[in-house]
Image 1: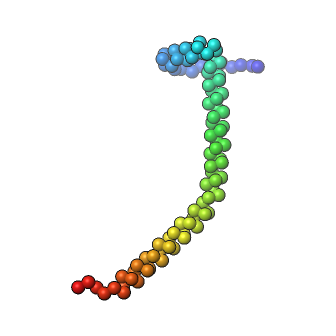
Image 2: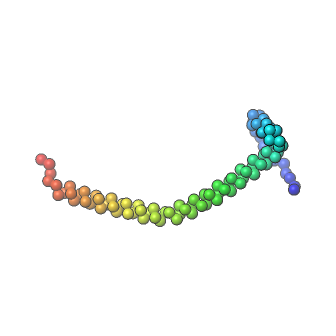
Image 3: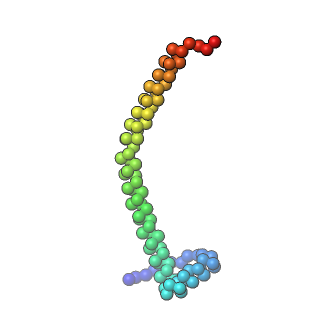
Length: 94
């Protein structure tokens, strides 16, 4: 396997935490960073797949949602007409 060098800047506290974690885990700092970045990249792929699945579900649900909203608007309009008719039939208060 051919390797390449990656350098990043961090705070002293963060570097100390990485060093401590690596020692406690019996790994090199390089191994810890490689493992962490590999997991981070894999999670990003999972997020993209989840987002694509959610997008498909929303797109499939939108037509029914639109129908439900139209039905609700029609029901409200009917109720308004009934209320208007009832109010028009009532004698005015003296």
